[in-house]
Length: 394
Ligand code: GLU
Image 1 (cartoon, rainbow, N blue to C red):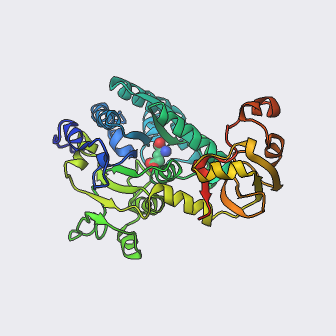
Image 2: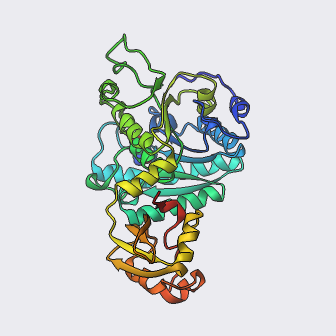
Image 3: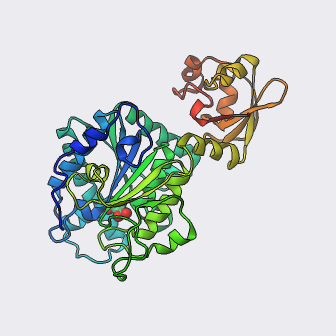
């Protein structure tokens, strides 16, 4: 692997960290940043060993951004690549059970590497292994989202990978580009950085097109942009440019800017902000607006929650809906389903995702949040509909 040495520190990032982030085309201008790291960067193809120096430099970049008030989350590949080395499986296509076994072995090493590298920078790593249902099924989606946002609040750095040991082809993301985009969308990140062995999107796959030009900036992913992506990934990682563009569609629609950049540099995040070659994709909304339009426009409400006048006032002032203000429940809904919130006169006040299923909602309606545990037998969320999951009618 060729590694240039500039920038040799994370200092470029420090310079571009302003107290109030703006929205320029730099990572430091963002608030909540997902960094996806490809297998070919972390694991040396020939030896199967971990590139520890590179990981240390990346961890330093993450530290600088984190100290500057940015919330940092990592999606790291490399479990299968590390594990197959330990198990001495040849390069080339692995059977599903070999990939799963490799992931089981490699994920331990991968998590340890991240924990140690981040710890050296004074940061706490938190391992999260996701399966497809965690971002696609709303009940589990709310759980995964709540855990990730709690970790960010506690200033830990979530290190996410797919739970490859149990994922089969029908129930897997399959590549970490799209997994990272789903995670970015789920937590309302405003930036997704895809670090891999390519330094951006080219007008055609550069391996077979010597005239291909790299594009610096993509304002929207049009069919022409999609057509520029080839199909192939490297044999260590699953994603090629095609999955990166698909990731871009998910992330930018959810309000995150995306950058595709080469990780073949020490301090790859500092390098992007220092102006190294990369491709930036503009977000198509803000994360908050994208989430609200998803809740208001794309979900079929499964029931309704009637609330009293005090709750309507509280909701209008931006508060969450607490069980105390709920006077009635109709319809059959599960936790995470969309519900309509109506006032005493039956008029719609807003829509949101319910933190309880309809039976539980019925039982805690009208009660104080500190009574929830005694009523349900477990301590659930204080709000029936959290304000982040709520859209008020204009
Ligand atoms: N989850 C896989 C791993 O950790 C990588 C998937 C990908 O390369 O996109 O090995």
